[in-house]
Image 1 (cartoon, rainbow, N blue to C red):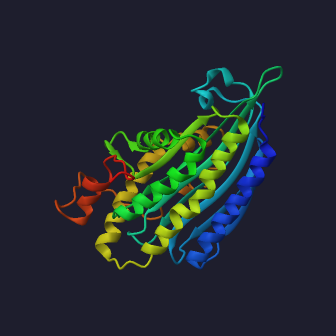
Image 2: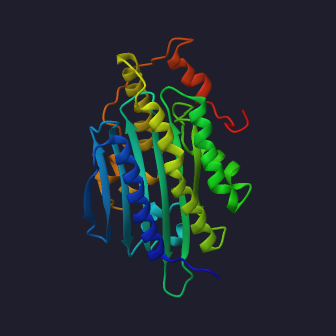
Image 3: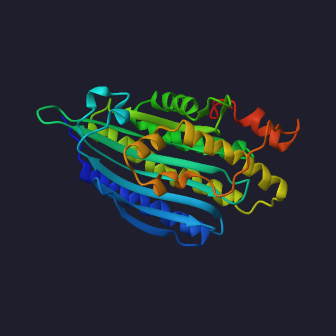
Length: 303
């Protein structure tokens, strides 16, 4: 029976971070900053950030590996039997906010968690996924993104993509607004139903697929002409991103509750955001099309 290998996972995560940053720097033309940090309670990480880039208005590709000797009950809400165990969590998490409103925001995360206790079997799982948040939707972009997600999962189970796609639709849903955050992708958590080696291979396939899923979209949209109207709508819709991350996102909550590094946790927030009271787009407008044609859940690969 295969067993967890945290050192192999950590090596792959650091390599993934570097490959993604290198691809983004090639598109943007401006280097990412590097910020190494240590966590007094155990562990640390490497944050790679870009602000005011040529293409990316703000973005972060963060690696973290944090440890603890006593998992707090608030962080073990779904598995209360793990409270009090020693634990470690590691992952790469990224959010990219392009300046051009026609280039969608994107999020990707791959992570590993393990809780141990003397005399007991270790409990481990993987989590992750990626999702796309356009402001002006494009059918070709949505189909491409979902196809790459599908192809990354299929070798590990024919039913995984449909299941993780549905999970993503349900997870990245802004309940208090009754609307999706974007056009979805895939999401999974607490995944340990395959032997460790196979589960790790699946997660590597997802993480390694990110560059193919997103960079072609960014390349196609980064130079699309836009004006103040598009930037204004982008800032308004970015507000939904902020609301979801601060109110509903499990990763944000875990990071803050477990004493994570606030700067790294909140790097997902966009730099320019607007809110308006009870605003609605003009019917038939490009802005309205986001709500009618893109945010409702749909199977992008069969249409």
